[in-house]
Image (cartoon, rainbow, N blue to C red; front, side, top):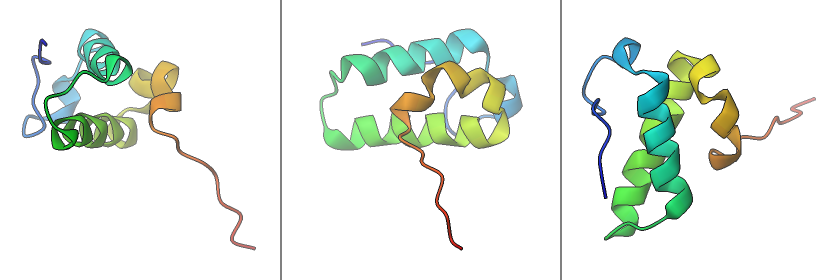
Length: 71
């Protein structure tokens, strides 16, 4: 399993579309040694989505974000 070139501790503004694609591919393959490794990637993708939604738009289905009506 390969890892993204940018880690969660790095500046999110440096994340590229290629980094997000690699992250999404790992999440789609779901071949992690532990559930916590998958959760770490999921949280990283979510952080990227909050910082730059355009990069994550093709992979929103991986985040399972739903709109809630509070009214």
